[in-house]
Image 1 (cartoon, rainbow, N blue to C red):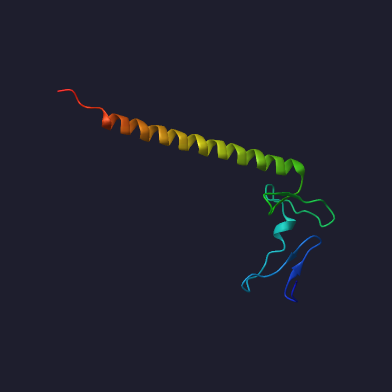
Image 2: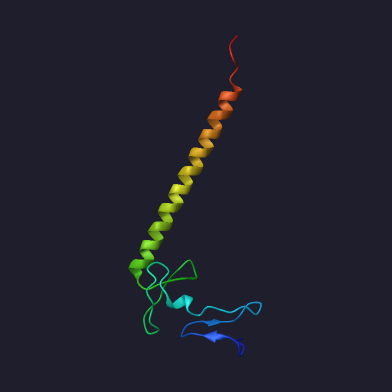
Length: 96
């Protein structure tokens, strides 16, 4: 359970890990726009620990993450294709 050194908010109890300071403010600030989220307002969560002030901010972050993921997949695919082409060029016998 919570110890006397824990910090509580309206929804969560955050206990220090390894005697480190905890940041109870992190759940009060939107991860996208930085706007403070009032304690009496809804907090929209994404990926378990990322708070957002609105559904719109959360959706924008989800879209950004999907775009970044697609870009990373394409870069990886391009890299693998390039490496495969290099291997193929090295395997082709040179005519004499």
